Image (cartoon, rainbow, N blue to C red; front, side, top):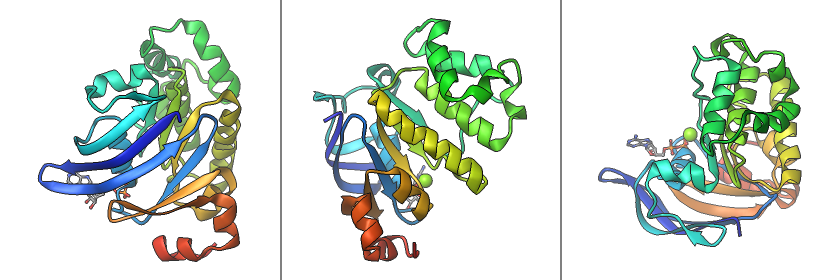
Length: 234
Ligand SMILES: Nc1ncnc2c1ncn2[C@@H]1O[C@H](COP(=O)(O)OP(=O)(O)O)[C@@H](O)[C@H]1O
Ligand SMILES: [Mg+2]
C-alpha cells in the first residue's frame, strides 16, 4: 500500500476530532473522502501532513512509518498537499509558484515540463502573477505546483470549490488521468456526481470516524449511504 492509516486519532488542543481513522490507498488509485461540513475531512489531510498532532495510531508511506516525522519532512518523503482554498503566492508569477514546488526536491527547471504538458494553459501564463489568473487556472496551478514535487501521494482538499461545473469537470478529468502516472490520490470532493465519476472508492466520514467505505460503482448503484452521510441525492 502506498498510504496506510491505522486507528489514527488527532486533536486540536484538548478537542479530539478524529477517532480511529483507518484506510489504505494504493498507487494509481483515486480515493474519495466525503462527508458533511465539519465531519473532519480537512483534519484527515492535515493529520497526514503532520499539521494537526496525531494522538495515536500509525501512518505509513510505502510501508515506512512516518508519523514521527516533523511537518516539514513530509513533502520531501513524497506526499503533496493542495489545501482547501488553494493557497498560492499570489504576487508570484506562475513560473515562480512552480519553482516553489520544484524546491521540495531541489528538482531542475526541466521537471516542470511534464507538469505543464498536463496543464498547457499554464504554459501561456508563465510570467503572469498568479493572483491575476481565473479561479480554475489558480486551482490548476495549485495542483501543478504539487505535482512538481513528483509526489507518490497527492492530497486534494475540495479542488472544485467555487468553480463553474465545466471547469470542475476539466480539472477532475485531469486528476483522473494522473492515475496513469501511478500517483495515489486522496480527493475531498463535495459534489456527489463528480466524486462518483472520478473516484475508484469513496470513504464517508462523520464525526471524525469513517462510517462507510465502498467502491464508487457500488455507491452509484445504491446511494443510501450517500443520503445518510451527506444528505443529498445523486
Ligand atoms: N483549528 C481548529 N481548532 C479547533 N477545532 C477545529 C479547527 N479546525 C477544525 N476544527 C474542528 O474540527 C472539526 C472538523 O473540521 P474539518 O476537518 O475542517 O471538517 P471538514 O473539512 O469535513 O469540513 C470541526 O468540528 C471543526 O470545528
Ligand atoms: Mg474542509
